[in-house]
Length: 276
Image (cartoon, rainbow, N blue to C red; front, top):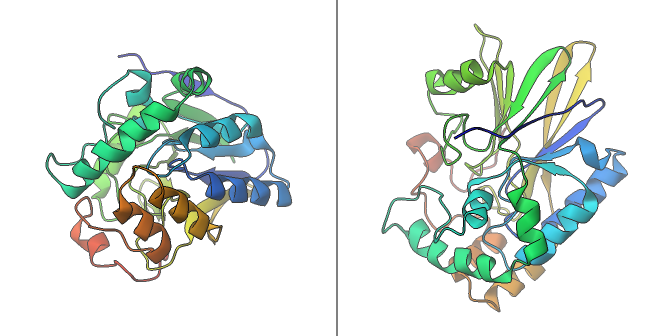
């Protein structure tokens, strides 16, 4: 299948985030942060999955459209566009994540308007641009598989295939739900996951994560930030909807219901502070 790649020109600071997951309150807060930092909407880039676990998929997509931020298609957007019966997250069949997706995915599917479906159907697979004389590509999972889970502990040779295929110096990725940055000493390549704003990072706090990319001369600077927002309202709305109550609790506790998708290193860090 041919990839839809959007090539853009961008200058100034860039706000990076992923996994809005239908969390309207988090998106509202992030939009205010961008405005307070004088980062224009076209410099705000989402790694996909605008729609997901939380209670306001339609309102979230409409705010995203109104804001004018950029996004690539995550696996959720691709599945919704295709009218698929599941989220395409590559959860192990019969796992807790798989059973939860059988609640939140049809809920989101039932709430989206034709206008919102049209918007997410037109999202590109990747965004590419030049920044500080480096080639940058935005992916969801990796270049080859939108649902690939790539973590900091994932062996570098698996990451390198995405750099090679996309002909990039920097990869900005999403999907795994945890923020990190990793620089490879030999190749000088840089992998960035800004984190997600729709769910906590399994660190024991309700705060969520994003990143700001800036440059000094030809040097790229990546700063990760945690963000508080009205998580109690988000959780309350989820409790009053046909959604997994385990996810509603995670919004409050900052602890994932399970660590099925996590490698041993990341699983062992559950409840500890994040150091991206």
